[in-house]
Length: 336
Length: 255
Image (cartoon, rainbow over all chains, first blue to last red; front, side, top):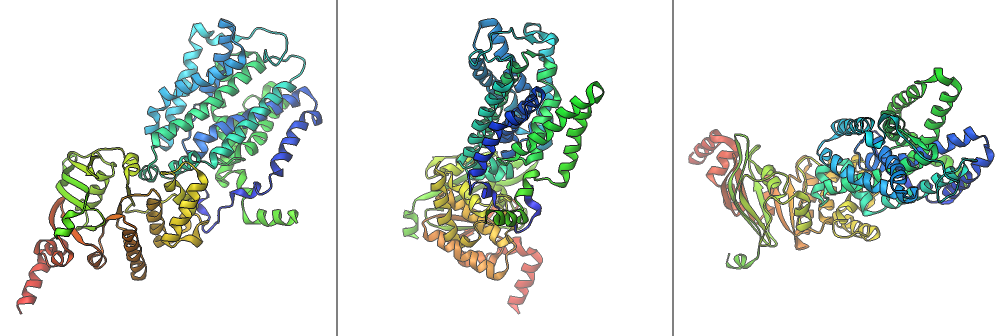
């Protein structure tokens, strides 16, 4: 994506020379719910964090490995359904349900996505998109899991163990924040490890990757497994947050697209990309929905569409504004 | 010659045939490469040199025949297994990782033998020093000159610690100075104890470099000998320069 800039020396580590950026961001995020205190503002912040988390998860397969998967909502839904149904059927605690959902999503993705790895570029995207829709339709018509009526989670006394909070949204915010920090650390680690190098090599050229001893299919599967595991975890958080799930709310194409567009707007294949894309997109989407009321239905889709068009002019994403030589000069000056 | 026969057979190809639909790209080729040699593989365009490489490296499944490396059967192994087994290759059309830096390109190769990032970086830096690219390590692969890209591809292949290196037209597109540097690099690689099989178009380059030359034409092996004799081989000259040139040469000689 940065291919158009000849002779550009790659400088991805500008943020990491000084770790205080990370500490500052974390402190700001911890304090944010006390700066904006309205319930709706909390809801928007939870949505932002959730999609930052989902964006980071997608980034592993879509950004670093370059396999544009467009069916992630299915795995988001699988996570939501697994934890919810396991609680209703077997009384399994949603925290364990969250892990089980992740494992189940990995299993399902291994079966249905593995054959797709033979496809490249847009064909892979189309195949995953279709598979995501197939899973949604399957759930819509599957009576055992509630069909189109969905699943209503029983109300329980609020506690961390029950994963339910009714008087305030704050715990959901902090739970999502912790998960965001975890995935951020994981992606940071992957970026600097053999796995990260291999994934990026696969993105650049599968033929070259193979000639260097990389088992391309295996590493794509590893990346996809990481990705869908965390996507499913986010599904459980959503289910516990809304306490009601149905195929239209957890598996829509819109969610699949958002999961992909968030990191792409921010900068696909970069650590900070999803963190930049999520606030811009989600704040715009949630507020357009709130301000325009029922009549605003569809405006959120337009925003996503407009963002996708805007990205044509900045294919490396918003992150590229922070990687140019002019920014580096400015950064040096303020650092003194 | 007696001394040479004592050397271990590193690569042994027997009766390798590759058919694409109706086209026979490689017709029961036999080839042996001994430990420590530089073997040249030449032939006109479309004679099946690159196909032959791809069959050895597991890019294409072979139709018939066998490939053995260090005495072990490796026919139709997947490409990554071949590399892990000790055969590295470069590509005819440069196939470097364009938006990764030179150092990162070589590190990807180095990860073939280690899982530690610092160790991979050390290996890669050593290899870049060896290949003469150390001051370019932070430049994006895509912004190198063609000669440096080819050099980088060799460096990246070396980072996988191969015992046999297959070079596919490493000299194509280079000017005479760059060609001389490339030849020098190949010599240094040989001195490191790595055996080389070199596909080449540029005859002047390959002749002084190789101990043995194998000539392909239309998928068949038409000659295999020391370079001096290959240069005067009637079949080779016909294949390369055409019947007319051969006839002309004959008349020139007789005059």
